[in-house]
Image (cartoon, rainbow, N blue to C red; front, side, top):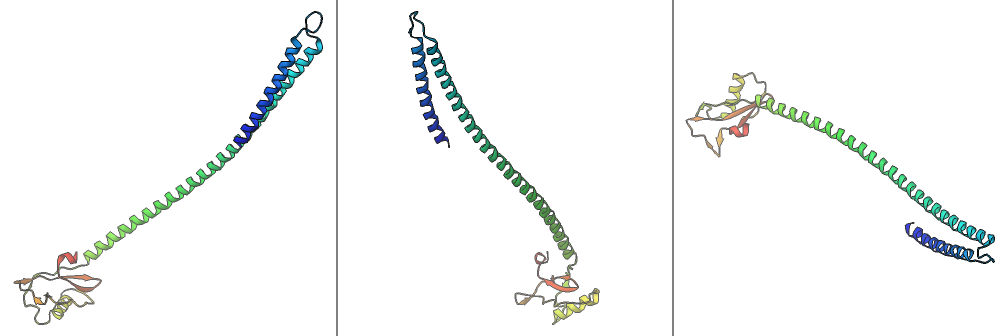
Length: 198
């Protein structure tokens, strides 16, 4: 659009220059003394005025065309600006929705973290540490001994297999064997170390 406008503008400028040149020639002719008194005649003056009026009219027409072209360009720019504003509004709306979704997910995450911490605390509170068994007190059947002892000592309805007290295929040779047990949902479980129990 800009190249075509420049080309048309150049052509119009050449035409205006040609018309202005013709009008100048008419004025020069009108200024020459043609009558006996050395002054231009009325017809020559009228012709010069008419030529000047035509030049002015052509220049006004050129300006009108340029103004109309500028108006069309401004209209196109206004339409693009409106479309851009609509896109920005849609992006802002989507951003607000995403922010709300993120806030909801963060709240749910914090809630789940609290529930996980509470569940871990409850699990820890349900564990039992049993220490100080004298070596050999369990006899030849340590699993049965512990299961029976725990059921008699504490009101547990069910008891899982406690496992043996042997570590690496040999009985603990300390004076007091330390074995850790935990109660999870009413079942007795064995832990070989406090780190595994934690």
